[in-house]
Every structure is written in C-alpha cells, then in structure tokens.
Length: 628
Image (cartoon, rainbow, N blue to C red; front, top):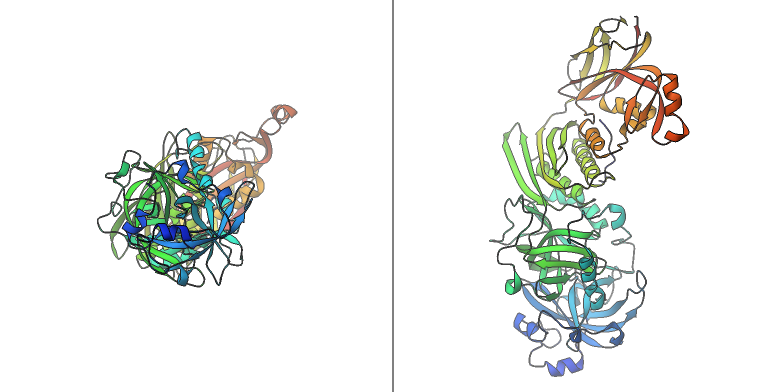
C-alpha cells in the first residue's frame, strides 16, 4: 500500500470587589462567599453592547484594585467571583501583549481554583470591562491566581475579521506543529491558557481514552457531557452550508457576558464541542475565551449555548461539566486573544455519512458534520471511525476491517477509499490510511480543496485474515513479445490451507530481448522497491496528479506483479518516459531542463494485480528471458 505520512491528535480567574463597588452595589451584589442570582449579576453590568467609555484601559489598572468577574457554575445562571489585581505583566508571550495578573476568590473558586470552562469570563473594575480571565498560573497553586487578557487586545480581533474578505471562507490551519508549544505541559509551572473542556456526546469511553493524550497536548480536556433535550444538534444535520439559525438572530439569543458558550467541532449523531465563557457582545458580534482555542485563524464552526451541570474540583485541574444546547451562530475566527462569533449564521461543515456492518447485525448508518481545517478534520473523522468500531463491540483482539467510501470534492474528481486491514493493529492501520488521505487532500500545494461530503463504509469481522506469499509459479521461463503469461501466486493464510491466485500477464510487443526481472509482492513490498529506485513516481506535480496518485495507491488486500528491464529513461512532470534514445536523453538531461527531468535506469514493462480475501505480506523475485 502506498505509504502516506499520517498526522495521527481552559478557562479561569478572578478577584475581590473594590470597596467603591461594594458600597455602590450593596443592595445588588452578594457578600463575599455568596453567589449572585442572574438578575443580581446582570443589574451591575453595562448593556451587552458597551461603548469605549465603559472599558478600562490597561494603563489605568493598578495593583490592589478589586473587582468581580462573571461566569456560569451551574445551569445557565450567571454568578460572580471576586478578583484583586496583583500586577501587570508587559510583553507576555510576544511584544505589546500584556496580561493582568489577578488573585481569584469566591464560591466554587475557593475550592476548585481557576476552572476549565472559565476562559473568557468578563472581569470588571469600577463597573468597566477590563478583560477576560483566560490564563492560570502554576500546577498546584495554594491560592487561585489567573491572568486576564485586556479587552483592547480582544477587540482587535475584529480588525482581523474585517481584513478577511469572507470570514471563515479560507481553509483554517491547525496542524499539530502549530498547536503544541507546551500549552498544556504538565511539567510547566508558568502562565498558560486555561484548558478548554471538550464535551463528548455519543462517544464510547474507550474512544475518549484513545484520543485523550492528543487532545490534552493541544490544551483540551476531554469530559463526558451531552446535549440538552430539545436542542437543535441531536440528529443528522449534514449539508448545512449557510443561512441563518432559527431563533438565533439579533437580541433573541440568551448569550451575554458571563454566559456559557460552546464551539462545536462535530455535530449530529456524534457531538464534540469546547466550552468557555462569553466576554463581550455587541449586537450579533461575540467575543469569548480570551486565548486561542484551536490555533486555526479563520474558522467556521457552530456556536452554541451551553448549560453547566456541575464543577469537578481537582488538584490537577478542576473543570466544568456541561451540556451543549441550541445552535445560535457561528465561530468565524480563532485568534491569539480569543474567538470571534456571529449570531444568526449557520456554519459550513463537512457532511459525513459513516456506515458500519458486521456479521452479527444489520448495517447501521451514522450521520454527522465535522469542521474543515488542516490538522483537525482527519483527527475528528478518525475519532468518529474509531468510536463506531469500538462502540459496536470490537474493542480488543483479532479483527479484519474492510474500508470503502469516497471524498467528494468541488470541481475535482472524487478521492476513493478501498482497502483492508487485519490483525490486532487493524484499527490503527485504518486510522493511518484515513488520516493520511485526508491530510493530503486538505494540506497540499496544488489545490484549495472544498470537501462537499465524505462517505465511509466499514465492515468488520472477528477473525484474522492475513496471508503470506509462499511461492510464485510462471507458465514459462522464456517469453516472446505479445505472449500471454500465466502466473500462479501461492498464499499461506494465517492458520489455514494454502490457496492459489492466478494472473495473466500480456508481454508487451515493445519489450527488449534479454533478461527481465519480475517482482510479485504485497503493496508494502512493491511500494518499498519503487521508493528506493524511483521515488519520483510518488511526487505529485499538480492537482490532477495528486488525486490520481491517491486513487491508485496500493492496498493491503491485493498481490502486485511488476516486470522490470534496464534502460535509460526519465521522469518529466511526474510522468515516466522509459527507454528514451540517447539523443533524446541528451536533450532532456540538459541544463535547460534541470529540476523538471529526473533520469531513471529502470523501466516497467508490464504490471498486473489480483485482489484477494486477505491482507497480504511478502514478496518473490524471479527472472525470465525474452526472445524476439
């Protein structure tokens, strides 16, 4: 099989109310250690759309100032917590990026510290919005200490959105290399983003465990959750590509500063979303989180209300457990200083149809949407594929998985899945194949892909179906141009009797007299030979060639035959030109064509393949003689 490199995968803070605010709001704010009701919390705040006069500039922030923050600790009720300014760190992370260090206290926070899910919690001093609680300090601090992203840093996100012609229309980045940076390094005791709790719904615990390390490496905390009864995300939503969300436009949404908000990566029969807190709202524009979410830049994923079930205190990192409610808009930008969303929009995601069958039950079909982003789409699809297999009882032991399906691309041919994997490592082999193909489609230098839909067909059985090439028999040792040659391949299955597969090879009329080498082998063996001798065969030169290579990649359940003869030739723009005359070679291999012409000393004179019921291993080299 053609080997494709695969790429296989937080929120806190607060302080103490100033004496001025306590005196001014004595009748509306609770005493220290007492939560505010939704009405009480809202009555102390400016309207959802704040003017510049209602923001506090970071230059006006002084050590010892006291204020309060807003977040949800249970249900949808916005509660208060207290903050005290400890100081301002200038040029944190990069030039002109400042962080306000604060001590945090109050109900829940005193016991749990800065809690995953508090990211974006708006912080106020003297009734003015200072910024968003977005960072925590230390691994096991004796006192909760957080970092506040200044509001002017977050408002600058709008400039990034305005500079994008169509926000969220570009394919977002998000490769694992850009997402690490020690964001969630357990050995680090410095300032780091509050981890984002990722709510899984419809996923088996084994699936969550399988991908937990990769998610935590990206600063995300997997937690069990669900969807709220009556929400708009419970079923198949494949095909959403624009328009408006029912009941989500304008001021009808319940989202406001301090509300719990979710950004959804998967929706439908499977759901996955990250939960944080709304920092600021102006009409339909939303700012939240206060730090990067997925490190993608442009983005286009659903924005949902969220309901907090409870807070789980944990010395290693407390987190909110929440459920995702109705979809109210789209998250369009993932910035260093937070995320930007627009109420009323419907996100464009990739519709996925995943069918699963085995010998013991009727086939089942799962429908869901996944976000489109380099480095994320392959991971999310693999989560869904693994979950489907594991949740249907195939968690351990021997198995054979047959893969089919296709990726439908706008303005380009479909990319096809067609392979088989067997043994105890079959699930990881399947993941590498799906992951690798999706990565090549999404992250290549030739075409900007727009995936219209994705269909994956899986059939699993509880048996090992592998076989080794034991011997090869040829109908003749001497052949002539135009002959047909019978070839028998003897396979030894795992714990089974020997079986035979036959091939008929037509000897080309243009073949040269003399010896000819014949390689009969598995996908791995034949591909390894090609990569060692003519690696340019697998280097695409344009979009059509890329898709051709993907669709012609070798698969594990086939036996391949290749005949080789020595002869000078070359590769030109990915195309093989064997057996060139010396005069043509001299012209092609001149200084004018350096870089576009690659000389080769071996030409393929014939190829054949046969499909089997096994995942094949091994190879056999033979020599025949051609007489003219």
